[in-house]
Amino acid sequence: MVHLLELAVTFIERLEDHLEIIRNVPHLDENLKKMSTALAEMDILVAETAELAENILKWREQQKEISSCIPRILAEENFLHKYDVTVPP
Image 1: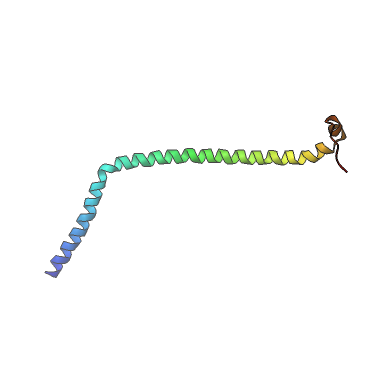
Image 2 (image 1 turned 30 degrees about the vertical axis):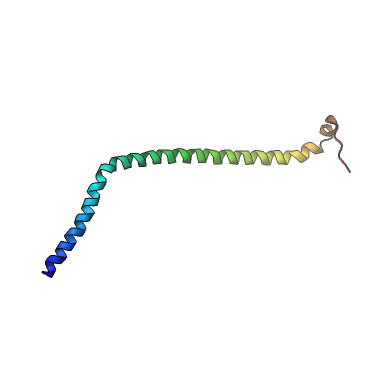
């Protein structure tokens, strides 16, 4: 009798699991489509993020170049006189 009760409990537990799987089958195609769409959107965001990071690095390098040129440009006497700039002592 105890053995039959154990078998019945195991059967019911497995039956609930199998019923849950069967209930989810009709939604499987829809969920796969949603996952596919989300993955495609993530790919686009990754590409855009990589492009943005590359542009930021280029901009940073340009800023370094510009910053390194400013003292030299300002030190040139022709530049200062050309724009009638006087440097305070």
